[in-house]
Image 1: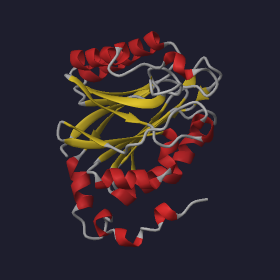
Image 2: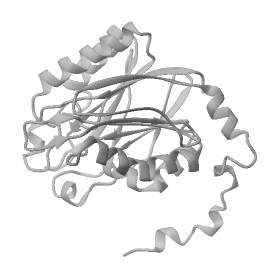
Image 3: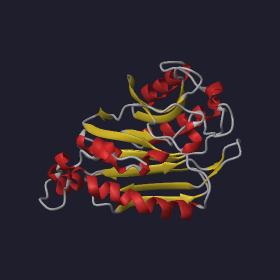
Image 4: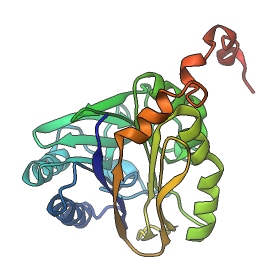
Length: 275
């Protein structure tokens, strides 16, 4: 990893109003580019909006396609990497909740949400691959909302080389302060246990489909300490500087980096346990 400056966006995304949401993404990207940012991340389903009531397949699209082409164009014009959420067509009548990862010269990859909430299972198709990405000498992973409750995902991503894990949410209900306090139960543990930066952001405001989202951004260092945070009811972009030294200090410390001392031979029972 090298020192990197990232932009983290708490964004209002109207469900189904794709053009409006993309214009907003472009505006944030332009502001980030003017500040010399390397990467910008948007919440889960920031492009298409989030629903657990409407038919999401009406707004799903293949990748590549017109939506991803627009994001590639924005990335190219602003010379930065963009992570943005959309509904991706899958086989059958259920789409994936996906996050596209786009660099200035094209799509690096797509992350499809692997763990769905009980309501989401009725409407969406789960992804089957845990993956990480590399851009400009930085290795990172992505988790989407409900997935963040499964610590195994963060461990696997860290073992795959992730130095930053982006936790990108479309998590409705509660006040911003209540949502922040909820995140404080597990985000510091994910950072501390895996010696990784954690970068989290939520959608914010009414989405036009009966849901309201509390605005929260939280960025933690590999010790699990908060570097930057925002709680509120309006859109917000935070510029964060992540330092290589903060990561190196933890990962070279004999007593403060735990991943390398794992004993996987003792964990074989985990796949066999069920409820």
